[in-house]
Amino acid sequence: METTKITEKIRRVEGTIAETCARAHREPGDIRLVVVTKSAEIEQIEEVIRLGFHHLGENRVQQLKKVAAQVAEFQQQHPDDPTLAREIHWHMVGHLQRNKVRLVLPVISLIHSVDTLRLAEEINNSAGPMGLAPRVLLQVNTSNEPQKYGVPIGAATHLAEQIETLPHLKLIGLMTMAPLTRNTDVIRTCFARARELFYEMRGEKIVGGQFTELSMGMSSDYEIAIEEGATILRIGSAIFA
Image (cartoon, rainbow, N blue to C red; front, side, top):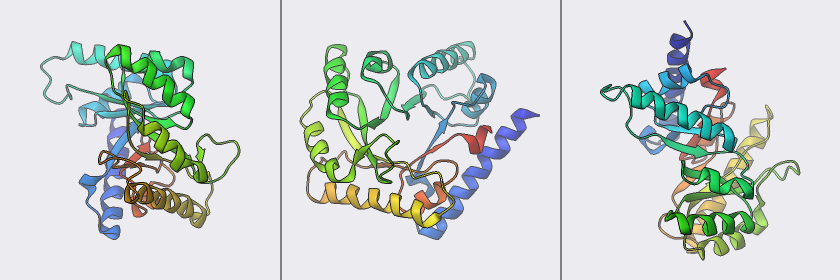
């Protein structure tokens, strides 16, 4: 049955996280697994929630709003089910267009993909009147791939300083994506660059004490991400494919 496959796969991912943490002398509890639902059916997502996972991610705003509404309806239909988390934390993990900001702000817990001052200002200006102060990550293009979103490494510190001046959002860390390659040295270099930048920003007091998250690692490379210091993993296909 498909539901059994989902359970098996997510437990396998959990096991790999635990094994990798043991190798890297880290605690599994210090790493948050965000289950990316973009390829999943609602029944599969419901099973993930029943298994105790309540941090879910989506790449596109319209899909996030749709799935979040379906999940909310599912929760309302089972008000007394002790296996269901009462609160789901939605993560916007894909590129966010400025004209979609108002749509997503009431739903999300964390935006992973802020990579320009204009986007940060749009989030700030929209959040203020809503009485919100969304948490965001600065997306950095550590692979220098021209087709990838993300601020270049050399410009990241200055952009972080600018975002820190905006009163209606909270910059809590960095996000990066490694290239789709089997060359583990290339992947590790990208994650190491993000980690170095993360600690540099903290050390130079460019960011505040809330700057604690390093979102990196997906289904194909999350073990390397753990070894290089990731605090948030974004995993979808290893669970749903």
